[in-house]
Length: 342
Image (tube, rainbow, N blue to C red; front, side, top):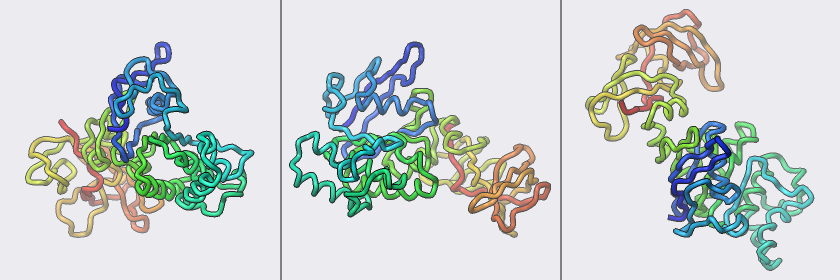
């Protein structure tokens, strides 16, 4: 293991921001700390960086306790939400900063800067002023600066949250590709599900200073460890169900399940996409009454009333979305389901 966090607790007076966290990040792995604002994920990242001193526990790198190692000697790279670039330096001057601090020869600096700017899609930008760049370009420069000295670990604190959604989605894909091509070991803090699942090899869900679940993105998404995790990951309703022969059944119908799920009772988490308008002759559909309709970019989101269940969410094509008050037939979509333990 490269990074090991053992029982780390961070307190500010009577407030416990991080409580007894155990976590590891392997060489070349990207791990995302995912949770709502104020859950302690950024405080944990700052403790790893050396910017916060743990009240208890230890942060280790390859087995060595880093308690006595100052921030600048941990050889970790940091990228924050606002990039924190030097406005008086051009792009090359920003990217080369860590190399200059290490005394790297100027020729090597220039070669490394050119290499990284090509990697982040800013080839030829060396003499551009950072104040003339867009927000996305500035974050690419901040990433190149953090990677320039070959950090042992890259720490990313909400690096894309200040960008608009379309740019954030594209930059997340580009960043994921870059981290894998460079085999960078990284710890990412984010509140955005899409960002975490795009970037990370594993996801650690946090709430109130504690880790609730750690696992591969698909595992966490489809098999939340608790109702709290499921609701944070978009499940707006949870209903009782049962798995038999690879099919989960509940009051809303049945759907096949992925993977080896043992037969028996489960709780079924329903995301907004778990129920969709059924085809005309589709078997197993249920009838519901439309209470509310809201148009989204790619579909209409419905609030429907189902007998014996109550109100739940569903989706419909924008062009044919039923009006409030209409009766509609709905079927379960397995992609919108999560299975929780009883």
